[in-house]
Image (tube, rainbow over all chains, first blue to last red; front, top):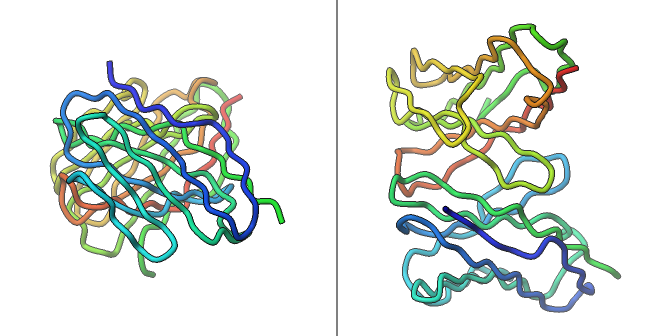
Length: 109
Length: 113
């Protein structure tokens, strides 16, 4: 079966750095997406990785290792507005997105 | 408007009733999707459409139907609602099917009693 695993909840301090991990087992791989979802709102796109390595976009970076079936999202200089759920999703061989349950990130002052 | 709109925002429905959730996008995206989101689970694909006039089944299609008569609209119909269909429903679109980024509507919160 297809499976995406990510921690259910994480807590971090304002101004700090946090890394959210995602491991996956899917039938085929056509890229990995990270989305941010604030409570009661729609998911919004953060990043897309299809090749191994690190993609940096401002305070957010995403890393992919295809051989290990592993990705992480790195958030730097945390702000209170970063409190949200972070969703990892893998596009499988049928070009359908398989979603993890999301990691709820709580930022404390 | 710019983006994707969904209607209604929320709805309480009696079991056995028929319900259509509406989704409209003005980005001229070819591909559209319907997901449901339940607590503790990832988003699950219900149906999708790669282009106007075509539809396909996702992971959890039973009890749902869709149509794609034109590029902009992608309604989702529950023919006879059951309590297990209580969920938050998101419509999404992407420029093309495949690896293009999907953009989500604001969601419809549906409760079936």
